[in-house]
Length: 184
Length: 184
Image (cartoon, rainbow over all chains, first blue to last red; front, side, top):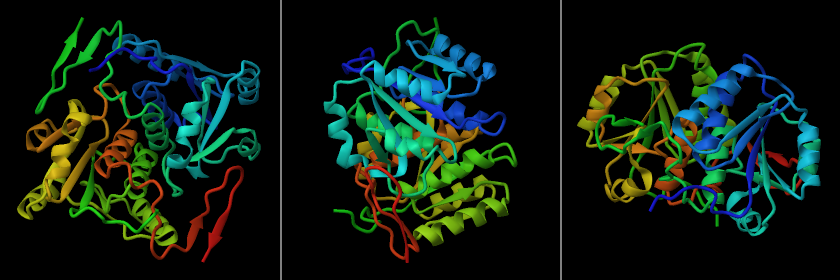
């Protein structure tokens, strides 16, 4: 049965590094939509203020419900340092890391809040050392968008695909052929 | 143990509809990389010839191995009609469809080849009627990139994340902290 979110004990935030306007407008939007729809609590866009993106995502969150948050502009290093000081741990998604099936259980076992770093193009090399887990969603060239979606799906034990969101103004009703949308 | 691909009996091709140059260059590249790394046999880019994208993806396939193919330019309707004439069936990924957990077993049970349609922005309305399965990877606004990745991961029973590819010139060796790449 679909239920409301936040069954796991820890928070999950996504840290998007390397976002550039306008180059990454669409891909970072895909990162944010994926984070929200697969159960992350929110996204930090590192280093760059992008008001349009923040407004667009806040609109989606208002219309489709839930408690998703988005913030932009803080240096990635401050976010990482604050996260650690609060007792949180760091996951970095990279094709160079250890295979997701090998490490997902240890990530789930840790009750700490998780910051999931996804880069655009290259990330600073030190992030490989900072991360508690460098996780590969396949050791192949892949997209950070699908890597994030698959990672969250596994992290939450494939349980979030029929989630219902509190306070949704717009709700899509699953349909075999066609479109069925309810506005509250 | 990682093994070589194509354990399922059916082929899986992805049909990318609505690709526009340059608007979709990066997102369609992410679609193609996701298709390849999660075990699809190839991608058709509908209606638009995009030599740069085709060359880029052929280069990835040569370097990282496997038998991934990419073709661009044929009208989507011709691809769908030929697919059907060959006995294949059609999956359309859309937030309006039936939840993946509810339909994945019936898709797997069908031994027919699968054409997986992913749109950019809106797709022609008739595709909802043409599709054998309209499948929602969450009934939320999401990215077609992560929807495709999660769909393929489920279709292949979460078995493709440690795949090794035949004839790879470049191989990434999984590493806890850092980068380890072997060139053959």
